[in-house]
Each structure stands twice: as C-alpha cells, then as structure tokens.
Length: 359
Ligand code: ZN
Ligand code: ZN
Image (cartoon, rainbow, N blue to C red; front, top):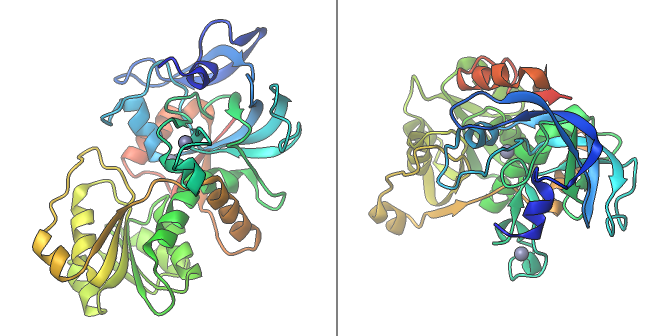
C-alpha cells in the first residue's frame, strides 16, 4: 500500500497541477454506476509520462473492476481502463530516454513492474509480484489524461489507427500470447471457445500460426464473423456438444478458453486430443472448474494459465497489424456513455465484438 509507484499513480492530494482538471469516469462504489466528473489532472512523477487519451477500449476486466467482482478488489476511487491510447504531452523526470513528447502510445494492463526480480529478469514481467495494473491499482484510460510509466507504455506505429490500437493493447496481446504459449502450429487444430472481443482476434492469431481453427460460441452471428475472419469450422454450443464435434475432427491440440463461465473451460478440456493444451485465459467471476485427474494424466493433457503479454508482445501485435494480418472489429461510444456501454456488453447488445470509448 505504501508503494511509491502506487501513490504516484493514484488520485491523492498534492500530486496534481492545481489549475488543471480533466473529465473522467470514476468508480466510487462497486454497487453504483461510474460517475462522469471533473477530477484533478494528473501530473507525471519520476519515470512517468502524461498521456492525452484519444481512445480507450472497454475490456470485460473493467466491468469486473468497477463491480469489485474478483478476490482482490481495486482500491477506490478508481478510474478504470487498460486499453488507453493517446499522445504523450509531458514527461516526468527521467522519462525521456525512449519516449518523447508527441509520441502516440498505448497504456496496457501492466502499468508497472519492478524490472529486477526473477520474473522481470527472464522476460516474464507480467508475473512480477510488485506489478501495478492500469485501471485497477493505478488510474486508467477512462479519462482525458493518464500518468503512466514510460517504461511500460508501448509506441503505436503510424499505420495503426488509435481505435484499432486500443483493443490490440489488451484483447489482442492477451490472445496473441495465449495462442503462442499453447504451442499450436501448422497442421494442428486450435479450438477457440468464445468469439467476442478476445476470440475474434484469437481466431486470427491461430491462423497466423498456421493452425486449423474451430470456433465455438452460443450465437450464430458471432460464428459467422469467426468464419469471415478465417475459422475453418464453427460449432454452436447451444445446439451441439462442442467437445463431441471437435473430437470428430480428431480433437484439438490447443483449446483457448475465452468465455466468462466455467462450463466452456470444461468443454474445452473435453475437446482436446491426447497431449493437447488447455489455455485458461478468461476470468469468470465463478472461480472454479471441475476437471478429471485420471484423463489429464492418461491423456497427457497440459493446463496453462496465460495473463496478458509483455511489452514485446504488444509490439509484436502492433507489427502484425501494420502488416495487415489482423482485423480489429469495434464500435465506438463517447466516454460519457460508459455505463450504457457496460450494460450493452453485459446483455450482449454490442454489434461488434469490442467497444472503444472515445475521449
Ligand atoms: Zn483487458
Ligand atoms: Zn519484477
């Protein structure tokens, strides 16, 4: 709690320019809607940059943060948002080595990592125990300005639109990393369970890896979209048993679990071929799945968790987009309509898989 980085990033008295205020969507109470209000504009502290936000993707995690759904609850008041993209307007001391004023950057979930622990030192900074998370333990992108650590923001190439860069910086990198970590490759079968904000990108990264892709969802229009994005097979889990259908194809070498309830995780497990890998990615509020030990052992199944991606992974995702190898499907809403946008996501009323808030 006394971590200097936390204090720097949080709305505490004395850390703001006296004259400046900004518009932000603030969580004061887990049971209440976000409040659109004027709050003091942050000032970048040591190692930080001040970013003027252009767009911020709406990730399901933001809803969990605002509702206090998870075992570790964020401190309040909180400005959510970890898919913020904008222009660097000012530099704190020591922040100018790689980032300059005028750079366009993304501010991902990993807002701070220590840089010297065994995880940070082995290319696994997303596992750092001292990490701070944007829009969770630090204020995030549902605001006109964010103070972010220069070391952790990622430059957005000119060819990548801000409205595309926003979802790529969490949804994109999360499934890019999960597909990569699954080890799935050419001639193998990759099952994607849930083709919403994350899944529509997972289908594309699995195709980039050369895999044959089967997409699973409960809605036909999402499955149609998955086909347009390259899925070779689709299964509507409301009508057919996805595990049985995928076993008919020989079983999945990798199954990426992206739906926010435990049942699809179990179905993903049951869909695996021998030696296959279940990638746990989504974070359902209901925290437990029931998986058999016997079949896991005899069938040589791997079960792995995957959390977002590193700085380098975000760069890779932007590079693939620059090369025209991914499409980001999104619709936009003004920041002021964030509560309506939350409602639409919770009731599956969004027309495109990702909503991006414009600031
Ligand atoms: Zn996210
Ligand atoms: Zn560390």
